[in-house]
Image (cartoon, rainbow, N blue to C red; front, side, top):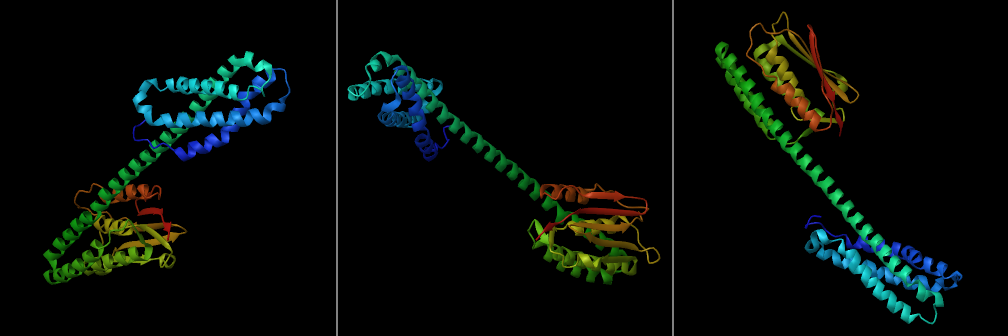
Length: 333
């Protein structure tokens, strides 16, 4: 046992009070039965034996504080307390000599065996309780360590979100600056306001309507560059729905659609957000750019891991030649 283990004294004493009368019956019944007499003396023998059992419990509980010193010799506790109980049986026998049957003296060996047996039972009960507590503590510590590990992992994933988005946003600003410097200035001012709002949010989960507000702000930023080439729709059943979801989850999917797909006024990129019950979907038509920078799938992989850690299960990705759809579960507010 660990030296740091807390001894559950209250629980042990409760067990002692509950089991002592039962142990007392087991202690005196063989003697009364073997004596050939009836059980009329049980009214006296059982209470006395109950007191003896409580004393045995007291000694065993008191010796727990020395258990680390005994080390591998802890089992000697059975003989220490058992010997004490035998000594007590002599005192009890002397005290109640006139009340006991004459056969009690020749049944002394049964008393000795019973004393050791009862004490062994008490010893086993105590150590079963201590083992149970140790197991519970280990399970709790493992759960805490696992939760701590998940929290650390989630924090790492969350810290990837804003830099990932910022990198792509700056890439958009660079591309815009080559074509329209005046519009670039307006874009950067709007982008700074948008980033200020996003960086103030340190929560793991946000209400759906707050995430949608970020998505709309992002889409408006992109429409400053692409105008009618980017079409965004959000189904009515999504608006004000009483759900929450991982921070930046919808925004990541919308951003990925903008990043990886070509769009023109004649062939616009269409992004649509829908909801069915507690499951939300982001769909865009597939118009893969002929030339685009390398992608390591950080955004989608990040979302997949965050949903898993937060207990939302796996995200569902449907990739076809004409459409790309990602769906995942929501949590009620």
